[in-house]
Length: 636
Image (cartoon, rainbow, N blue to C red; front, side, top):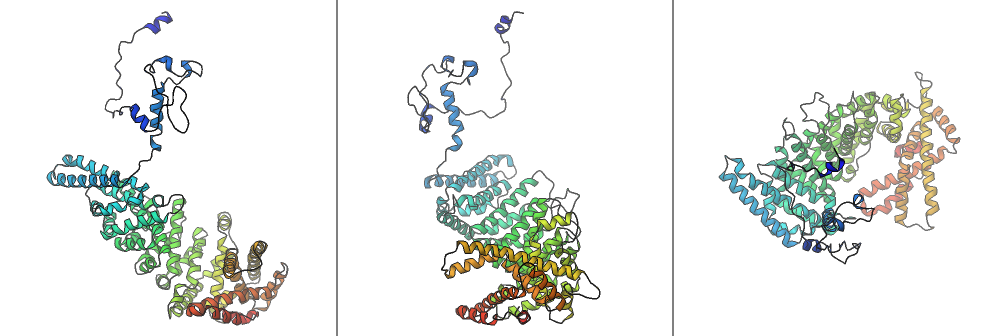
């Protein structure tokens, strides 16, 4: 067959089965609309940049000869006319066109929402036995809710919803039988409370107050009570096609509460109380609804999110923390922690879950009531069990122990609470020592272990600082000359049963002390090089904070341990020998402790007598004037 005949051969069947059953594309925008959108005409030349205008097409622009052919002929061009190119550019830039919402637009959207809700309510009553008959009105209601989402970029118009009485409608829709409608309301509030809605290129206080006012107005219509009820309606444990939707809905509701912690802590407190959220969270963090999984230890995404939200709430508000102390939350957290006595997190998600559990426990244990609850629930014994395992639980448990032994700041604000708090801390120290916790504590101090254990020590250098703090408080919380105090001291002094390990412990103690001193000295040298000659009170306080961040507290904790250990003659001689090698001495240790005692006593006197802060600091300096280590022990 001649090749010319091939191209001349006609096509007999031109019917193509393409696009049947699919949604048809809308017609191309008219030239008038293109001009309104900014695609104007400046003549026969190219489109000018910045104006996005195109040349006016002539009547013959559909002809092939009008196609831009500058790249080397029609086979190398894109095959589009100038008008077609203009339409495509308009489509490409359509997403960049911001839809502006003004008050009138919001009014129309609210009116449409009210009509859609009324129609849906009527249809549901009229066609109660025939869901297909009210499906159309439900779709209209769904669309009306989604049309309110652009308010996230115009939060200054949120007050219009309250002015028009639309807030009760939104709250009522949270109880709608169709969960998709409920999720639309939740998504709307979640987007409005997110930081992206009220903070553009830096926090905007005006927009923030608009969102705060909107949420407070919602709260007056029992929004949080309805949200808590909707949260309990969702079932994440059923094996159905809607599992993912329910799980997503739970996450969105938790998003709202988390957003409130950033927006306004008082709103978060209201939400937690009205939703009875702590009761739900303490159950959710312990259980995974994934019943199809054979591994009961699996941590799902919302379980991890619930643990994270608990940690955020407890750290955000002292009122929430106090409320949590009156619930079984402590017991739930300890049960979650107990799962890791003989296992380690399997992935990063589960690791984050465990860290959130640890952080929540630390916040609760830092309060007198939470510390008492921790002891009564045998939390100390659980810590010892965790430290027996050479895994991540051993290092993370040190953080809880540190918080449990350190004094509570809130106890200083209550008359008589300080003494009660001290008794609980002494009881915790006693139970830890009697539970053989010292053995594992000094394992970590000496970084004993191989392979994975050594990698954990490198990945968690803060464990050394926590050990110094824990050992210093174990010395201070046990009475001197008592058997408990001796058991701590025996780790650093020679004994008939141990002739070598005490030297290693002393050497490690001095090594850490010198390490913290060098870090602090380097920071002070940098500050001295940049500071001016005269310092005011604010600069002095800022300088002190920088020193704290550079290791001052860890240095002082190791100084305290050295002061107690130096009571023994042989241990003191070894400490002095090791310090001299690095240009240090016990006199320098005593001077650092004097500063610590001065600040400590000044803080105590200031809390008892806020009006006499200056006098209290002067008395503290006088009390800490001695540099004799043995005389300082009673002040520690």
